[in-house]
Length: 214
Image (cartoon, rainbow, N blue to C red; front, top):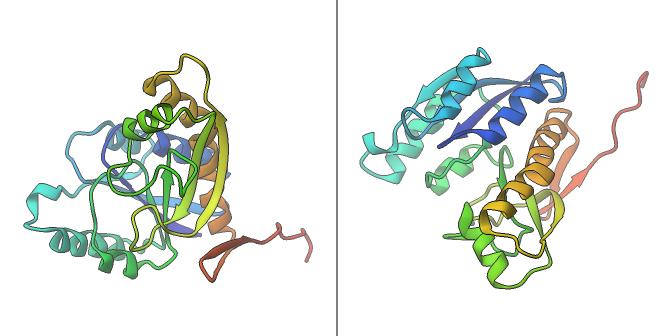
């Protein structure tokens, strides 16, 4: 069993996909041990509680700086034996030391085909606004390991989504979630928990599934 900690800051739609995948036995042997929010009262915490998962608020406002918050967050995850950290709409900045505490063990989902439309300021509707402003014909989502570079970690999975005539940032955001993010994140977590992901020279290699009986 791989112990998973999910970090959230909002409604938790991607978290719900992980919860549903766990209930269906599709997390590759992983189990969500805790959900930690950087803000109090967000709906993601209610989703966790409904599923019988520990829901914790570790408010960024209670700490003087990024480093202090990152240390507290890392300690909370270590205390719970978390082996894989999943960023699920987690909009709070953490320090480089936090990333180094969990090398190639922090998974993030980004609503674009990285390296396009990534980096500082590229989150939420801002990404889809930028895609539409550039007149892109396809967009999509990326699941990657987090490192010290914003949206710059090794790519695990990607899926393209068509940009349609008349799309608004809101309609495009919804379709990217439904057609890409909600599928890719549970799949990437499952691959990690099955020990099928290897990072070599900054590139993620995915091993084929084990053959039963071997």
